[in-house]
Length: 347
Ligand SMILES: C=CC1=C(C)c2cc3[nH]c(cc4nc(cc5[nH]c(cc1n2)c(C)c5CCC(=O)O)C(CCC(=O)O)=C4C)c(C)c3C=C
Ligand SMILES: [Fe+2]
Ligand SMILES: [Fe+2]
Image (cartoon, rainbow, N blue to C red):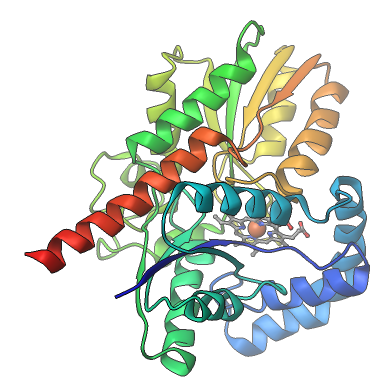
C-alpha cells in the first residue's frame, strides 16, 4: 500500500470581501457540529440572523489581519505543509474543513499521487465536536461517496503528547525570555457548554460543575474539550515551572447568547487590568496557526481592553505556525505511523 498524509485546518474566506466572508461563514456555521441546532432552527439563526449582520463585521476584522499572500491561517498552514513534506518520504497534502481548499481536493491530490492509505492530521491539539469530529465525519462521508478504495486513519487530538507540550512550552519560553510579566493567560477558543455535554462519554457524569473535567485520566476525557484545554495548561505550567497564581485558563470567541465555557477571555483581561495587573502575557494553544482569532481578537482587541483598564504591557505569544521544531514533531508522528503500520504488515 502507498501512504500519504493530509494536514487539515479550519479554513478562511477567499478574500476579505463581505460576499466571500458570507459564503465562508454560511458553510462553517451551517455545520451541525458547529451550531448544533435542528436544521430549521440553525437555518433561521444562521441565514435569517447571523449572515445578515456578521459578514460585514467579520470582513472588517479580516481586513485588519490579511496578508499580501492571503489569509494568515492558510499561508501559515501551507508553509507548515511544505516543511513537513521536506522531512518525510511520503506525499503530504493540505486541506481545509471549510472554504475553497476542500477536503475532497486534498484527498484527490493524494490519490493522484498514487496514495491508497491516508493519515489525516486535524491541526487541533484538543478534541472538539466543532473541529476534530467534524473533520473525521466529513472525511468518512467523502471516502464512502468518492474514495471507497482508501484506507483512512485520523490522528487523535494531541494535547497530551509530550512532544507537543515541549514545543509549545519552548515557544512560550522563547517569547517571554527576559521579559517581565505578572500573569500568563492561556486563552482557548470557547465552545457552548452544551457541546461538552454532548461529547461526554461517561454516561452523563459530566455536570459541568467544575469537578468532572478537572479530574485526571485521559480515557474518560477522550472527547472532553474542557478537560483537554485544562490539561494543556497544567502540563505546560509544569514544564515551565510556573508558580501557582501566575497563570490561568480562559475561553474566547463566544457567539450568541447560550452559556459558553468560562471564564471568558475578554472579561478575564478586563478583570486583571482592573485588579492592578500591569504586565500580562497571553498564549492561544487551541490554534496551531495564527488566524483572525489570535491576530485580531487577542492581539488587537484584547490589548485594547487591557490598556483601557490601566494595563501596560500585553505580550501575545505566536502560535506554533511554521516553527522548525513543530514541523519536526509532526514529521516524527507521521514516521511513527508509517513505521508501525510497516511493522504490522511485515509480522
Ligand atoms: C458556534 C460557533 C463556533 C464554534 C463552536 C467554534 C469553535 C471553534 N472554532 C475554532 C477555530 C477557529 N474559529 C475561527 C473563526 C470563527 N469561529 C466562529 C464560530 C465558532 N467557532 C466564527 C463565526 C468565526 C469567524 C470569524 C468571526 O466572525 O469571528 C478561526 C479563524 C479562521 C480564520 O480565517 O482566521 C479559527 C482558527 C476552534 C478551535 C473551535 C473549537 C474548539
Ligand atoms: Fe471558531
Ligand atoms: Fe467533564
